[in-house]
Length: 253
Image 1 (tube, rainbow, N blue to C red):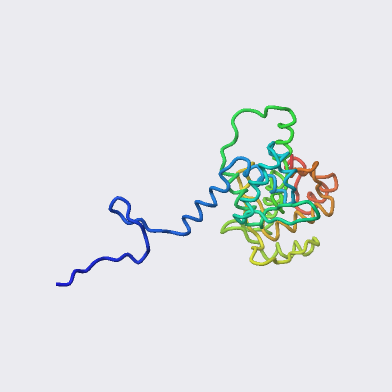
Image 2: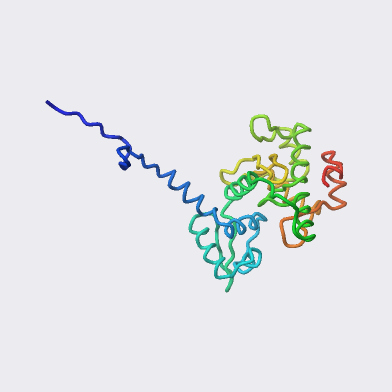
Protein backbone atom coordinates (compact mmCIF):
# COMPACT_ATOMS: atom_id res chain seq x y z
CA UNK A 1 0.00 0.00 0.00
CA UNK A 2 1.41 3.35 -1.02
CA UNK A 3 1.67 5.97 1.73
CA UNK A 4 0.98 9.52 0.59
CA UNK A 5 2.97 12.25 2.31
CA UNK A 6 2.16 15.97 2.18
CA UNK A 7 4.98 18.03 0.79
CA UNK A 8 4.55 21.80 1.22
CA UNK A 9 5.03 23.84 -1.94
CA UNK A 10 6.84 26.56 -0.02
CA UNK A 11 10.14 25.69 1.68
CA UNK A 12 10.09 25.96 5.46
CA UNK A 13 11.53 24.79 8.74
CA UNK A 14 10.01 22.55 11.38
CA UNK A 15 9.51 24.39 14.68
CA UNK A 16 7.83 22.45 17.48
CA UNK A 17 6.12 20.13 15.03
CA UNK A 18 4.87 23.01 12.87
CA UNK A 19 6.21 24.06 9.50
CA UNK A 20 7.38 27.65 9.38
CA UNK A 21 7.04 29.00 5.86
CA UNK A 22 10.06 31.02 4.78
CA UNK A 23 9.17 34.41 3.31
CA UNK A 24 12.07 36.40 1.82
CA UNK A 25 10.00 39.59 1.88
CA UNK A 26 9.44 39.23 5.62
CA UNK A 27 13.17 38.83 6.15
CA UNK A 28 13.83 41.88 3.99
CA UNK A 29 11.25 43.95 5.85
CA UNK A 30 12.80 42.98 9.18
CA UNK A 31 16.25 43.96 7.89
CA UNK A 32 14.93 47.32 6.66
CA UNK A 33 13.24 48.00 10.00
CA UNK A 34 16.50 47.15 11.74
CA UNK A 35 18.34 49.76 9.68
CA UNK A 36 15.98 52.50 10.83
CA UNK A 37 15.63 51.24 14.41
CA UNK A 38 18.64 53.14 15.74
CA UNK A 39 18.38 56.68 17.09
CA UNK A 40 21.58 57.95 15.46
CA UNK A 41 20.64 56.52 12.07
CA UNK A 42 17.12 57.91 12.46
CA UNK A 43 18.54 61.38 13.18
CA UNK A 44 20.66 61.18 10.03
CA UNK A 45 17.69 60.13 7.90
CA UNK A 46 15.53 62.95 9.27
CA UNK A 47 18.27 65.52 8.64
CA UNK A 48 18.64 64.32 5.05
CA UNK A 49 14.96 65.03 4.42
CA UNK A 50 16.12 68.52 3.43
CA UNK A 51 17.00 66.95 0.07
CA UNK A 52 20.63 68.03 0.20
CA UNK A 53 23.88 66.09 0.45
CA UNK A 54 25.69 66.07 3.81
CA UNK A 55 29.18 65.01 4.82
CA UNK A 56 29.74 62.52 7.62
CA UNK A 57 31.22 65.31 9.73
CA UNK A 58 28.13 67.49 9.32
CA UNK A 59 25.84 64.62 10.28
CA UNK A 60 28.06 63.75 13.25
CA UNK A 61 27.76 67.30 14.60
CA UNK A 62 24.02 67.26 13.98
CA UNK A 63 23.58 63.95 15.83
CA UNK A 64 26.06 64.83 18.57
CA UNK A 65 28.22 61.74 18.08
CA UNK A 66 31.78 61.03 16.96
CA UNK A 67 32.55 61.13 13.23
CA UNK A 68 33.78 57.53 13.34
CA UNK A 69 30.48 56.44 14.86
CA UNK A 70 28.39 58.20 12.24
CA UNK A 71 30.58 56.82 9.42
CA UNK A 72 29.80 53.30 10.57
CA UNK A 73 26.07 54.05 10.63
CA UNK A 74 26.19 55.69 7.20
CA UNK A 75 27.93 52.64 5.78
CA UNK A 76 25.04 50.47 6.92
CA UNK A 77 22.45 52.85 5.45
CA UNK A 78 24.29 52.96 2.11
CA UNK A 79 24.64 49.16 2.02
CA UNK A 80 20.94 48.85 2.84
CA UNK A 81 19.95 51.07 -0.09
CA UNK A 82 18.52 53.93 1.97
CA UNK A 83 21.35 56.35 1.18
CA UNK A 84 23.41 57.11 -1.91
CA UNK A 85 26.96 58.40 -1.63
CA UNK A 86 29.27 60.39 -3.86
CA UNK A 87 32.80 61.69 -3.49
CA UNK A 88 34.14 65.13 -4.31
CA UNK A 89 37.84 65.35 -3.65
CA UNK A 90 38.55 64.23 -0.10
CA UNK A 91 34.93 64.53 0.99
CA UNK A 92 32.25 61.88 0.91
CA UNK A 93 28.68 63.12 0.66
CA UNK A 94 25.52 61.15 1.34
CA UNK A 95 21.91 61.84 0.46
CA UNK A 96 18.65 59.91 0.56
CA UNK A 97 18.64 57.34 -2.21
CA UNK A 98 15.43 58.61 -3.82
CA UNK A 99 11.99 60.09 -3.21
CA UNK A 100 10.61 56.72 -2.09
CA UNK A 101 13.04 56.62 0.82
CA UNK A 102 12.08 60.19 1.75
CA UNK A 103 8.39 59.24 1.69
CA UNK A 104 9.09 56.22 3.90
CA UNK A 105 10.96 58.29 6.49
CA UNK A 106 8.36 61.07 6.52
CA UNK A 107 5.47 58.60 6.77
CA UNK A 108 7.09 56.81 9.69
CA UNK A 109 7.86 60.11 11.43
CA UNK A 110 4.21 61.12 11.10
CA UNK A 111 3.22 58.05 13.08
CA UNK A 112 5.41 58.91 16.05
CA UNK A 113 3.32 60.29 18.96
CA UNK A 114 4.01 63.98 19.70
CA UNK A 115 6.80 64.44 22.23
CA UNK A 116 5.55 65.00 25.76
CA UNK A 117 6.50 68.22 27.51
CA UNK A 118 7.98 71.43 26.18
CA UNK A 119 11.24 72.01 24.37
CA UNK A 120 14.14 72.27 26.78
CA UNK A 121 15.57 75.50 25.37
CA UNK A 122 14.21 78.62 23.69
CA UNK A 123 16.36 77.84 20.66
CA UNK A 124 14.86 74.37 20.33
CA UNK A 125 11.34 75.76 20.74
CA UNK A 126 11.96 78.40 18.04
CA UNK A 127 13.41 75.83 15.66
CA UNK A 128 10.46 73.52 16.21
CA UNK A 129 7.97 76.33 15.59
CA UNK A 130 9.74 77.32 12.38
CA UNK A 131 9.67 73.71 11.13
CA UNK A 132 5.96 73.48 11.90
CA UNK A 133 5.24 76.68 9.94
CA UNK A 134 7.08 75.60 6.82
CA UNK A 135 9.86 73.23 5.79
CA UNK A 136 11.11 71.11 2.96
CA UNK A 137 10.26 67.42 3.02
CA UNK A 138 12.98 66.08 0.71
CA UNK A 139 12.02 68.03 -2.43
CA UNK A 140 8.54 69.36 -1.63
CA UNK A 141 6.96 71.72 0.91
CA UNK A 142 5.54 70.60 4.25
CA UNK A 143 4.24 72.02 7.51
CA UNK A 144 1.44 74.58 7.55
CA UNK A 145 2.80 76.05 4.31
CA UNK A 146 2.59 72.70 2.52
CA UNK A 147 -0.89 72.02 3.88
CA UNK A 148 -2.12 75.52 2.93
CA UNK A 149 -0.92 75.01 -0.65
CA UNK A 150 -2.51 71.56 -0.82
CA UNK A 151 -5.83 72.79 0.56
CA UNK A 152 -5.90 75.78 -1.81
CA UNK A 153 -5.18 73.62 -4.86
CA UNK A 154 -7.92 71.21 -3.79
CA UNK A 155 -10.48 73.94 -3.07
CA UNK A 156 -9.98 75.36 -6.57
CA UNK A 157 -10.46 72.03 -8.28
CA UNK A 158 -6.83 71.80 -9.33
CA UNK A 159 -6.07 68.78 -7.14
CA UNK A 160 -8.23 65.81 -6.14
CA UNK A 161 -7.85 63.91 -2.88
CA UNK A 162 -10.99 61.77 -2.89
CA UNK A 163 -9.36 58.69 -4.45
CA UNK A 164 -5.73 59.43 -3.76
CA UNK A 165 -3.89 62.52 -4.94
CA UNK A 166 -4.28 63.45 -8.61
CA UNK A 167 -3.98 66.68 -10.56
CA UNK A 168 -7.08 67.53 -12.55
CA UNK A 169 -6.88 68.76 -16.14
CA UNK A 170 -7.42 72.27 -14.77
CA UNK A 171 -4.54 71.65 -12.36
CA UNK A 172 -2.17 70.67 -15.15
CA UNK A 173 -3.15 73.84 -17.03
CA UNK A 174 -2.66 75.93 -13.87
CA UNK A 175 0.89 74.67 -13.39
CA UNK A 176 1.70 75.42 -17.03
CA UNK A 177 0.14 78.91 -16.86
CA UNK A 178 2.10 79.65 -13.67
CA UNK A 179 5.34 78.71 -15.40
CA UNK A 180 5.90 75.54 -13.38
CA UNK A 181 7.16 72.72 -15.58
CA UNK A 182 5.90 69.23 -14.79
CA UNK A 183 8.57 66.94 -16.20
CA UNK A 184 7.97 63.24 -15.43
CA UNK A 185 10.94 61.47 -13.86
CA UNK A 186 10.98 57.69 -14.16
CA UNK A 187 8.04 56.01 -12.44
CA UNK A 188 7.44 58.82 -9.96
CA UNK A 189 3.75 59.81 -9.84
CA UNK A 190 2.67 63.25 -10.97
CA UNK A 191 0.96 63.85 -7.63
CA UNK A 192 1.17 61.92 -4.39
CA UNK A 193 0.03 62.51 -0.83
CA UNK A 194 2.75 62.56 1.85
CA UNK A 195 1.60 62.39 5.47
CA UNK A 196 2.77 65.54 7.28
CA UNK A 197 4.32 64.68 10.65
CA UNK A 198 3.40 68.00 12.29
CA UNK A 199 -0.04 68.58 10.75
CA UNK A 200 -1.03 64.89 10.66
CA UNK A 201 -2.56 65.38 7.22
CA UNK A 202 -1.18 64.69 3.74
CA UNK A 203 0.51 67.41 1.73
CA UNK A 204 1.33 67.42 -1.99
CA UNK A 205 4.38 65.43 -3.08
CA UNK A 206 5.38 63.72 -6.32
CA UNK A 207 6.49 65.52 -9.49
CA UNK A 208 4.02 68.37 -8.93
CA UNK A 209 5.03 68.88 -5.29
CA UNK A 210 8.72 68.95 -6.18
CA UNK A 211 8.18 71.35 -9.08
CA UNK A 212 6.10 73.71 -6.93
CA UNK A 213 8.74 73.73 -4.17
CA UNK A 214 11.58 74.35 -6.61
CA UNK A 215 9.66 77.17 -8.30
CA UNK A 216 8.75 78.79 -4.96
CA UNK A 217 12.41 78.84 -3.87
CA UNK A 218 13.74 79.96 -7.26
CA UNK A 219 11.19 82.78 -7.56
CA UNK A 220 11.70 83.97 -3.99
CA UNK A 221 8.21 83.08 -2.76
CA UNK A 222 9.89 81.43 0.19
CA UNK A 223 13.43 81.15 1.51
CA UNK A 224 15.40 78.77 3.67
CA UNK A 225 16.07 79.67 7.29
CA UNK A 226 19.73 78.97 7.96
CA UNK A 227 21.07 75.62 6.84
CA UNK A 228 18.18 73.46 8.04
CA UNK A 229 14.90 72.36 6.50
CA UNK A 230 12.79 75.27 7.76
CA UNK A 231 11.55 77.81 5.19
CA UNK A 232 9.56 81.03 5.52
CA UNK A 233 7.29 82.80 3.08
CA UNK A 234 8.60 86.17 1.89
CA UNK A 235 6.54 89.33 1.41
CA UNK A 236 6.57 88.64 -2.32
CA UNK A 237 5.48 85.09 -1.62
CA UNK A 238 2.55 86.28 0.49
CA UNK A 239 1.44 88.55 -2.36
CA UNK A 240 1.78 85.85 -5.03
CA UNK A 241 0.09 83.10 -3.02
CA UNK A 242 -2.85 85.39 -2.24
CA UNK A 243 -3.14 86.33 -5.90
CA UNK A 244 -2.75 82.83 -7.35
CA UNK A 245 -4.46 80.68 -4.74
CA UNK A 246 -6.23 83.01 -2.32
CA UNK A 247 -4.00 81.99 0.59
CA UNK A 248 -3.96 84.61 3.35
CA UNK A 249 -0.86 85.22 5.51
CA UNK A 250 -2.83 84.00 8.52
CA UNK A 251 -3.09 80.53 6.98
CA UNK A 252 0.70 80.33 6.84
CA UNK A 253 1.48 81.28 10.43
